[in-house]
Every structure is written in structure tokens, then in C-alpha cells.
Length: 154
Image (cartoon, rainbow, N blue to C red; front, side, top):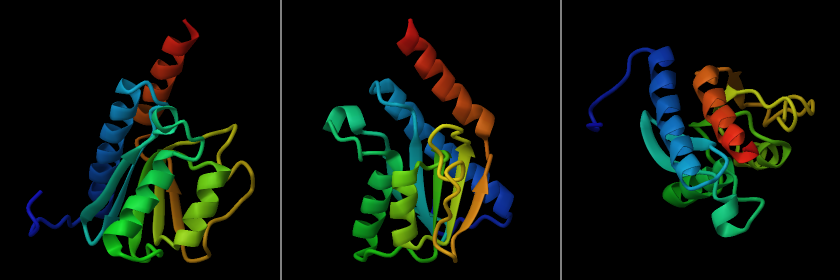
């Protein structure tokens, strides 16, 4: 994407960036990881891309969101992600919600809801200034997860 390319429609922006998160989720699936992907965006630019690495790293904390937060903080050379948006294919879990709260993101946009481990089902909120939008491209995100777990059950 050329640096001068600017989206004019927030809905189209969100779809474009969620598609990038879905690409990361597909990479996770190919690596036999739970297919969750994330990107962090600031000023219409992706500054971090990540997917689940829990199996590869033997680390239960290596969720896509945690990897993306770390990469974005390194990119920005600071611990806060003010004015940044995280796009993630699955509603963040309680652990990731804690990290997202501390990072002070401007927005979190997620795809599929997680009725078992999602932070909203646990009645948690993020940083008071963080806006949360869920359900974007949820069907695509859920299809990746359903396919992955169907293969695991065979």
C-alpha cells in the first residue's frame, strides 16, 4: 500500500484491516496454531502483524493480540498504543483484555465473539478511552476457527 494512499470511509478501512488480520489467522492455521490473527494500525498504516504462536513457542501467553501489542510497542518505541487500533479476528480473552487495557489503545475491532473465553462474556471492560467494535467479518473468522477445530476432532 503506497504511503499516500488514504481511505475515506471508516467502514472500508475496517474491512481492509480486518482482512489483513484474517490473513494472519490463515498463517496461524497453516502452522497448526489456533487461527487468530491481529494487526495494529496507526494513521492508516499497519505497524504490527501477528498470529497465535502458543504451540510454536510453548507459551500460553503467545496469543495474537499479545504478539501484536509487543510488536507495535517496539515499533513506536513506547509502551502505550494511544491513537492505535487493534484488529483481531476473535474477541480477546481475559488475559489479552488486561494487556489491551494497559496499552491504552484507541480502538479494538474484533471479528467473531468468544462465548467461552471472551472478555465481554466475563463482563470486563477495557481502558475507559478505548472504543470496542465487534462482529466485523465474524462469519469469515468463525469459519476459520470451525474448520480448524473440525480437523482437530477427526
